[in-house]
Image (cartoon, rainbow, N blue to C red; front, side, top):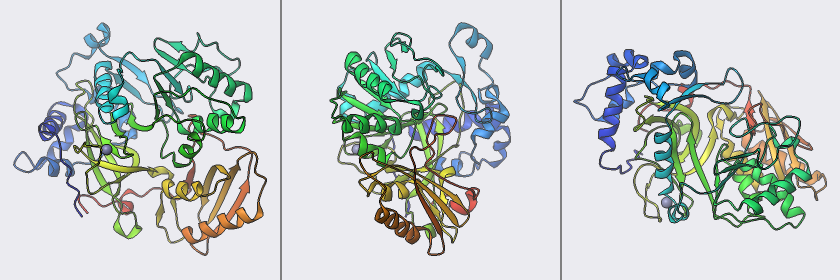
Length: 440
Ligand SMILES: [Zn+2]
């Protein structure tokens, strides 16, 4: 059951360097030194012996303690080599990050190699339109609309200034469609839920939309249902690009639909779900940055689940690093059967994507009660038989004693961060119960 990806020649060397620098020179990892079995064992084993760090740790220990002691932080801040940026979200979610642009740019450029469409484009100085919540990136305007000029920043155009799409009307979606045509971006980078709304509108009103050479989907995963809707209006290649502010670019989808680890910049350790839950090779990602001199990040639990492809090969020809077949959702968004077995967001999305008229959904679990909100495509009327079919399918998934309440609603609300959280449970996450430590 062991998955043994091929790694680039210097991967183990970079991994060793990252780990040794951390435990010898980075304040926050001082206590990890005692856990290190030392250089006589394989580097993978050394990593496995270490704990994981979480966003909570990043907040608690603050950014300075993640930088090697030899670095002159204040001089670098003063010269502008690095800067401090705050991530979005609620106060409890917010993190101050040290931002080192050359590292980010190199990791982004490395990700482009994994897809023939991005590899073929001359990227770096390209026009890029961004469709997401200004809580993630961009310029927020709660009351009035901003002009195209006000939403432009260098080669970037932010297509949306509202916190979330619940605040959009037809006129704003028309503006997004019009501006795509005017701006003609090489890349449209979009939150899949947001772009699905534009695509559904365009499809419903028979509107032609500008087809960017590439659409990258980011900010939200897995996006199975959204992709289905996006493809009703956009014929551009859809590419999942996965990363985080903390760890840079981590996985890039190739033209064959597989996810490739950006193995020159980021080390990935995977802890798989316990076999009894029936999710073979679905695991949580622990990320280590290999090339950022301004932040030492070791086994960062980013909170996401990926379906790893154990064969590790792909028809696109890239065979370095982990190969994944899909994002399975967030660990915090798992729901549970009445027997306590986890159910991923990807499982729910695959079920929902099977019904043509389901446009959006949300699942709230309260112990044995599952409240399901469904938004139907506008031309569809509430259907009694659809409700029964949904209930039947979810009963066989969650357990016969589950109470399934299905409601057809006008819209699904986002989180304060502007992101959609499509599944959630009141049952708290138990990492040890969910995952196997080490190899399967
Ligand atoms: Zn591939």
